[in-house]
Image (tube, rainbow, N blue to C red; front, side, top):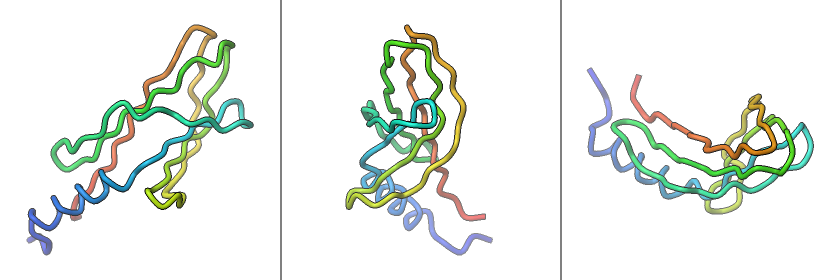
Length: 101
């Protein structure tokens, strides 16, 4: 039996949606670049954000991603490995499930 009501969890999802404000990606374990938020939505129990990472003009690897909140505080980060050719941009999908387990 769940402790939290769906109304409460839906409100927390909305707060999370509104508080993730800036996304960055790291190229080749060095420079951090700002991504452009294309869309943010709540999909079921998930907060989903799509972020554009344009081509750098050369083959590269996105080696990490990080998220900041509205106050400029680091909310989270993760190491990744996404290889691209010089022509590829990337549309990064961030999914933040907010459920009671």
